[in-house]
Amino acid sequence: MRNAAIGSYRSRSKKTAGVALAAAALAGGLVIATSSGSASGGGWEGTAVLRDVSGNKVGKVKFEGDEHGTVVKATLNGVPVAGNTFHGFHLHANNGNEQCNPQAALGPFRNVGGHWSTTAGAHGSHAGDLPSIQVLSDGSASARSLTGRFNPADVAGRAVILHAGPDNFGNVPIRYVAEGSSVGGPDADTNATGDAGGRIACGIVEVD
Image (cartoon, rainbow, N blue to C red; front, side, top):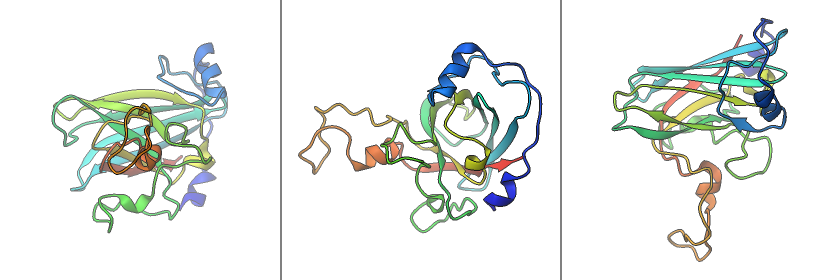
């Protein structure tokens, strides 16, 4: 349950964040991190183990946060993909406090809900939107990013989802018109998910 996890995060000590990364995090932005950047003093950690639709462990995502923001570190191995391809990577709401279900009624891992968002904004501005991950042809990947969009009380119990396709973050020019529409630009699906496709791996965040 999310509430049980929230109260147990622990203090630790790490190096001070770089000025540029801290400024970006405090502004609520999301950037690719170039250092471990965390401030000294109280902090928190969280972990999500990712499993594919067959139940195989295919990766681990670690969250390390403090007042400057949260470093998100993903390490993947054995992801069932073809070629060197980018994949959407997000925190999903999981408001029902469920476990990842590869046999959910609407499709694999659909039971954990849509992208987690604290505002009514379109995709790209959701609190749970993270940079896409490039997975190599052997199914491995390593990625690191910094976000200022959430804290322990927010992220505990959320679901980390790796998608089958790349994430366009809603960046569809107005000249492109979706099939069945007369209006150019991103459609409802694009604004909700970034057209990243199906869900190929899932893990629930546990906060220490």
